[in-house]
Amino acid sequence: MTSLSQQPSLLLSLPPELILESLAQVDYTPGHLDQLRLVCHDFNDLLQQYEHSLSLEIIRLQFPLNILAKYPGLHTPGSSLGFKTLDELYMRFNTLFRIERNCHNIRRREGKEAAWMRPEWVNLQQAGMHLLYRIHDSKSHENKAQIIKSLPPTSLAILLLTLHLCVHQLRSDGPCILIPTSPLLHGMLRFEVELCTQELILHHGPSYQDALLCHCPHAISLLETEVRNMETRQLPSEDGKDAQRTLIAECRCRLAETLGSDVEHNRKDMWSILERIGSLTEEDVVKIIRGEELITRKRQDSGVGL
Image: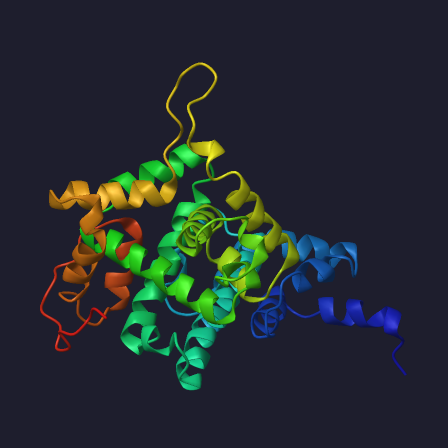
């Protein structure tokens, strides 16, 4: 009878190609390959030597086609790919799945916010979520603002729609701070709290939206802090410099600038652009993320706005 202590040796007696082929077909979960490193030194050496090729094979077999192209800030083409990147891809994929599922659940319940969860808008929101990840991956506020300033009208319109849908999801299933009668509003109007929410989503990415939908205490605390500091952050600094413009303000100003319009017309401008965007292909989604203008066309459903 083979002892447990002999099993790693028996496995490692197989050709490396066969071992790696088998590992690539095991359902991926974050951290499980790092756990295999602890089995023995030989396993650690094998995984370290073939980490890049194994990661690529797992992505090919278990993730959507062309997924890396949707996260330009996560992995640079031609650079080494590791298990940490796989872990992040897994978490992002599941985060977006939960957000999309929540949209469909709200639509099925036919409540007050259900009209916002039209399938074609939810599809646009998923593209916008990938753009949010690109903004998030740029790290600093200045870098995030720079990306937003470089976006064309189609990417901006989809980004703003994404933020709108996030707010309507949270009105339905979010924490009580987004309920108009909540004492946690600290005297703020609901739209001001929702502006703070959109700012935090732009800063932290889709994982923050997911955390609010899960009523995560840390996410709620961040929102409460943002609400309390809303007026203070708009004041000039002690040396007289103007306050740093918020990311949501950058989005609105950029859309108005690219169209030669006014910020107060953002909502109308957003719908005007969206109604000319047809069904998105995978190539379209990548263009949106990269900030490349889409070729717009008249949608079959012209009643985009509510």
